[in-house]
Length: 167
Ligand code: ADP
Image (tube, rainbow, N blue to C red; front, side):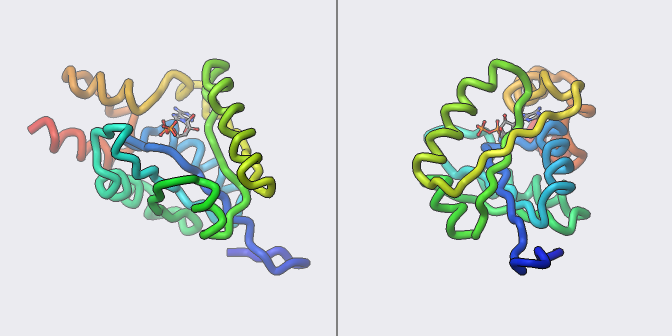
């Protein structure tokens, strides 16, 4: 990883979410973030109250396999406040994806709350390719659960996981 010539510091960004499971939309955001930051930590929220379909371990496994060729991307999990996790790993940039205007209200609220909790955290919003703007983990689970094809919507490793569950 390249260091800043003046400060000697690396710019680490956290891309946080449920990733239940990772979709091609998430992967699109990760690839865009790779171009902007020295290191990206994909942070999987470990919150059982959200009743995820996959355990955080399974979600991390799917992400790990899907990012294995991206040298500057790693995966971790966290619970509790995201800003505490970010402090722990030395990241001041939070990456989130914006698909459409309906994402905005919630994301705006979260960004301002995180800034209130830690004023050095900056939230950066990245937009995916247009073809992913309708894509969400919930849509993938719903379509896959009803026997529909999700091949073009999720990375290969996630597809394999979804197929394993169906059997
Ligand atoms: P959360 O439950 O925290 O919203 P998600 O896993 O649904 O977690 O999403 C994580 C982040 O990725 C959020 O910022 C979300 O807006 C973004 N995201 C989800 N799906 C897409 C997509 N298809 N394209 C771009 N960003 C997305």
